[in-house]
Image (cartoon, rainbow, N blue to C red; front, side, top):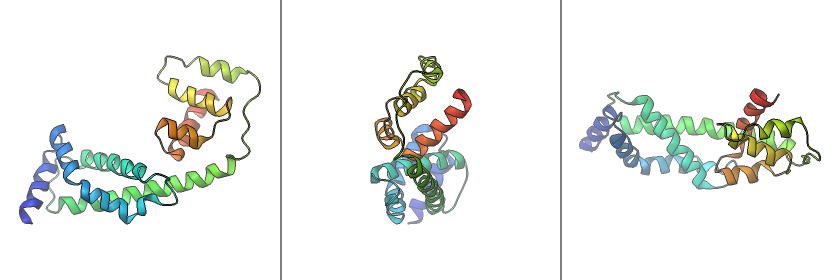
Amino acid sequence: MLERAEIVKALLEESANPALHRALLQTLLPGIVSVCRQLRFGDGIIVDPSETLTMALGLASELLTDWSGQSRQYAAPDILSALRGRLRRQLLKEKAALRAQSYFEPGDEPASEASSLLTRLTSFQGSEYERLARLTFARVFEGRSLRELAGEDHSAPGSLQAELQHFAIRHLI
């Protein structure tokens, strides 16, 4: 038991190396799944449990990057505890975004005519914002649901909504 703790501690200390970062992430995978299970895979918030696991893996990777080089005697339990807190906060944000989204989703109608918005959106072709412009077009002019677009974009509806809002405020208004 102590040998395993020392191995995880050493991996964390050297996790700036991408191969060791990945090895540590793979070592923690059963614990990461357990954290997701404790949070019921975001049941009632996230439709697909694999999306919660994907979110947890991303958060765990960020956590390992943040803690890289640190020496922690109980590295694995510390990492998993911190992950549980971050994942819980992320799920609560998703829940709030889902609640806010439900207020707007049913009555959204597609735009019926071309506008300066359409011109503005087409101006983003080939730019770093092309993806967001394409998704905004689908949402506004095709009347597609946020949930449908998020599924095609492989993102969470709440995260996509926040990203689209930020894009609109920053570049369209």
